Amino acid sequence: MTSDEKQNGFKGMVKEVIDQILPPSDVELEAIKEEIWADLSALYYKYEDEVQKKAFRQVMQEICGKMSEGKWDTVYKKLYRADQKDKVF
Image 1 (cartoon, helix red, strand yellow):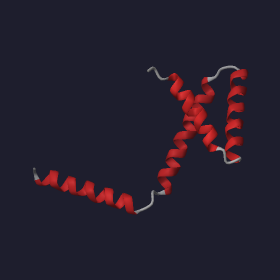
Image 2 (spheres, rainbow, N blue to C red):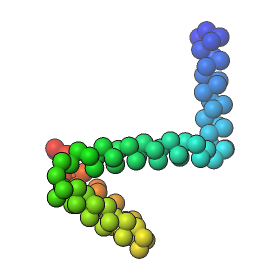
Image 3 (cartoon, one colour):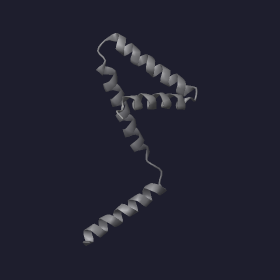
């Protein structure tokens, strides 16, 4: 093992320890949120007619309502079932 490989391995170990000790930064969270908004935007604008867009808005309202009621598990289960249905076994 070369000294560069040892140094990179050591840096990786130190970074892992620091990542475990320090809480994740808000900057990372904001970047992820921006990515989610971009994904939602792409999804919304993929629908071309008003009926499809209305259905999208209704689904978003349903999700928001369930989450406001503290029923994230209900939303998660529905998302999970839809994801599993699309997978080929």
